[in-house]
Picture 1 (cartoon, one colour):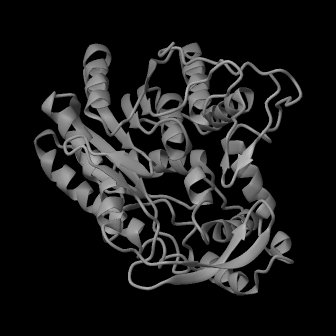
Picture 2: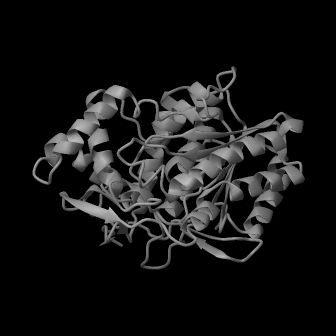
Length: 396
């Protein structure tokens, strides 16, 4: 079938298997070009199908020569209907990993559930024995708590006061003002339940209980801080409370892994175009300005560049992992450089619909957004028939 992008608000409801495949191949080639990393050899990636999780799986496999198990929750293809992009990404990854002689298996299901945890633990036990690196990169708006059965929904709201600022519709390029009402009721508790560290801790405890963590095992969860421009709705809002909980969980996990000399870290990563960030008011305008400045200065990074640098320069140097005063790994260091942030603050005040195409990188934002779904990828013939029924080898 000929597959074209179909938009519904901030979501693309179709994805292109060949475009997703090419994206994965491009990331693999980047990792290969940077040379071998003396890192983990048996890796579990929870949330392995898109963004930082996919980049972590690719870096583990093609940088560290690691066996990988990826857990994700993606929509399978059906005749005449495309799968979600993460399904196609994972299918392409497994194909390339197997071609390279690397172990790679995947589990598709709700990572919050006890069932998927048990399935994953059984696979590790049968095939790998233990893992030495666990990446936690889930990005879900809802979580059914496996013990209480309560369905928690996260919210993106400020705490205390209404937040008003600029945003942009990245499809039309129209800059407008938006107001977000403050959190109420159980908004904070629900957001912490979904996006905090509770599930990460459950995964590590389950692995530990079955002796599936190697001596000296490391686990890393991903977070974001961002600039003062967005802090009212992000870091000081409901999501910020969840991130605080996630960061506190890293310390409690490290304490629980003392017997095996294990460590847990939160890596604070750069702002990038994702399905989630595209729906957050204010963030698309910020990213558009950020991209322009970082590209001009030659310091722009996407997911794969960020994770390669995390592995090469932070996690696997042979020395102690460098962290900030709160124990966090910072690979948002280039984004948060004072000169970069000062320029964004100036441009933010100037930004209107008429000039955003010049002072910001709205075109780069749009391209990255469509790339998420396998569209607008160089080297792909979008006029040719594509097989929507691409399967994942270990799941088929």
